[in-house]
Image (cartoon, rainbow, N blue to C red):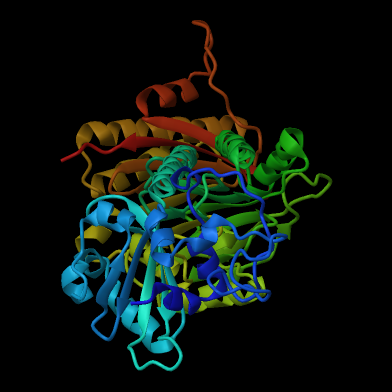
Length: 558
């Protein structure tokens, strides 16, 4: 087979590649480089026989045959022909890598490594289409990685032979191994970043008595940068729960650091049991001190089981969505102020009903924001998905993530917090009770409160010891309100499956504090008594200028 003719059919790039030789393989020679004939390296010079022109001496390399050139290449070269891709030639590098090959045998038999790499169909395609094809960094079974180019070769003009394919395999093992090490390093960095991000989020969500809650966090992108999305659930006492979702714009350690500081601050401010808008007001000032150039949004909501609603405030965050039991979805989009850190804005609180059977969703913009799409369209898509999303909170989380097309290669972080106010029926409903007594003050208020508490706690079939402690706590809280508060007053007793809650409200906004009473003092011991006998206690201001003082008793486990 005439390799000079076959090489002449190569496209220019492959022909030039085949002409390159390894410097170490060609003996050095001192020659004058003359002008190459435009008729090709093996054709006679236009002025006469090769080398006849003393002004343009022929270089010794031009006398090398194509077989010699291909044989000296460090790359693996094989030439096959015909529909069965019979072996016409393999160079020394190919034979050294895979062993000698029988000339004339079909590639399926003589070149099993190509079959194992799945390249035989590619040879068919190249031979049929006449178009070169390249596969990058294929790992061969015996070790090593190669980038393989298959180039169609047409038979010489005027002949009836079959076409063939030139297989050119460059060893890229070092490059492939370096790339794999880089990918492994990037995976480790990303795993570290995601671990850092998740460590800044709640390791375990608090589960209030009256709500079922689940959350999910999906890191965005494939790089090692962490994001600034966060969520939190904070138990406030007396059955009330704070729910938080926030987003620090940007990615990287700085965004994560700001997020961690804001989340810690929210938990501290929540312990003050302030209204949502006051919590955001404090957070706004802190955000400006941390980094005024870092944009952050936050939504803060409080659920009170006695009122069956969410009281919320938002600093530039997307609206909370509430799905009613019948599938209707409502937006809590009022009372939204600018992002945190802007300063000078008076945040306000709004309310949205959360009746039994309803589901609320708090989320970050990564769930609904898409390139070349208005974010309102994303929120509308989330509403449609939520309308049909039923099941447990975790199931709802997963369904929303799938419905909005969030995948592992999503380019933005996603945080979703789902809470449900379950409808309680059957035996479960027997564990939740609520009773209240309005008091107008006067000397009869204290005995009325004791009698009311005694009757209610007995009807709830509490142990005698717990009934006695509950009556004592109710009596002390009412006495404190009678002495330091103003009418109207209300005593509320509430039981859940895990605790007994006693709460007294009145019209005075001065919060009580625990103090040490002197032996001669006739008053000042009520709050200390409550703090001693109860599992926990606290107080907060209520809308309209009043206050609420409460205590809890953990129910004995069965």
